[in-house]
Length: 151
Image 1 (cartoon, rainbow, N blue to C red):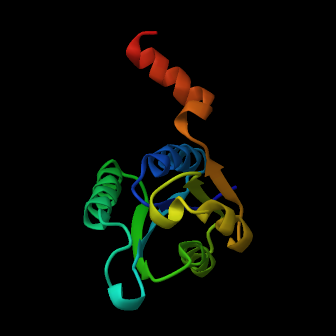
Image 2: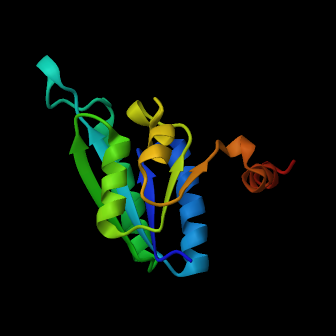
């Protein structure tokens, strides 16, 4: 099955849903998770500045998620890379380098993740890609939310 699963994350709600699926699959397969975050940077005159103005907060959120999962005993590591273009290519390159068996990502996100990231990743990835749709489109998540509000 899967030995190494990449969770491609930008810190968005969509990425959080993808994490839930990555955790579920990792538990079933006793796989490790590698969280990959692309710190996308602007080019030209604004070179070096984050493309996402909330980058420091998003990175801190992701680091906290990974630290919490490590504390719970999960085999997970965080890889953060800066890029000026093509975050999907960066994720695909990390997947190739570490021999990932699966990449899990959301279908919507922030910055480049919003602008066709998943579609590009499907074309570039060296392994299968699981694109997790928004929460209202996932039956088990919608059911859990109904239970939480007592509906």
